[in-house]
Length: 442
Image (cartoon, rainbow, N blue to C red; front, side, top):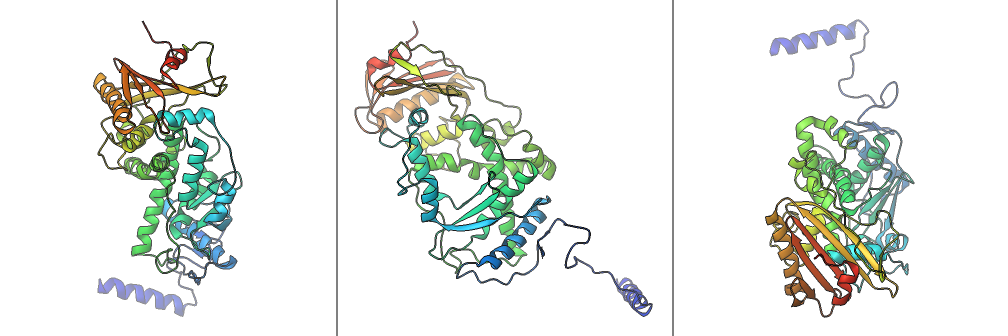
């Protein structure tokens, strides 16, 4: 070892005496010949930035922090940003005002989607689904990336807008995904939205977590709100059940991405953007990707002239395993950990379709048909749904398979029938409406 060091020193002295320069070991001030992974807008990933976070970031400070964070995302993800992403910091009050959340004065409704969320016993008739989702997001969103505007917005909790380094890193991953793979378009059903988000948000959280670990062990990073710079985490949760559904991709997604990364590195993660998970089931159970795909469930229209399906494409929605878990958890039908997304009544899901109905007087109802991996799985789900009605919502059972919730946000009539691996739930305002919405079989 001493001989190797002496030879290296001798070579350096010889080069210097000969008038030659010794090459820089590491990285230069700016990459030659264009951009490089780990360098953005004048900053390498390990460069210091001279900023003060306690009073917020001025324009030049925000640009410096953004540039270095982009370089660090490149370093972790081994992918290059194609362009700089503008970043805006706003207060939570301003976010609510823009998004139509609580206190914004923005009203709107989606009666088709109302029936979908009502089938899960998560959003009742006293609060529309649009309002519940908007209020829940308004209380919990920390930031977002807009593909259409190619812009990041950070939501600050403090009066003096401050930037959470984790949120900035997370949203920059979305910008990188959009530039490299495209984030346009929207899946058709609730479950396929959760499945796609499981990849998109799972990767962003996975990279964000790696970023944070390096802040703790290797890199010098700006303080986080709550670390002496003010601010805090997301706000309250307007509807806990809706929150449990919305947050599922962020919770289950990182482990899914990690399993794919373990199999094939970043190339395998890249391939996910060409072949998204087909269901939230695959995100919750990574070993089921890509082979165990959901079955297609078609609900026959057996309504009379008083009740009609919505003019909606698609005519029905698929809620999937994650949403069914949330329904079971928030209706006291499982003791599983809230963020495990695994319970006996929801595991074994194979496919489902909820078809909303309406009549001329403004009434709503639905037919929800679900398919399960085994008869035992179907029995567990049907029993849990019945128990949710009778134990949590005080339903009475006037006749076989029929239940009536007398009052409250879910005051309706329900018919629950299991046939082999299929469970069919019909909902309407009264017992008399059940056959009019979906005539019972012989």
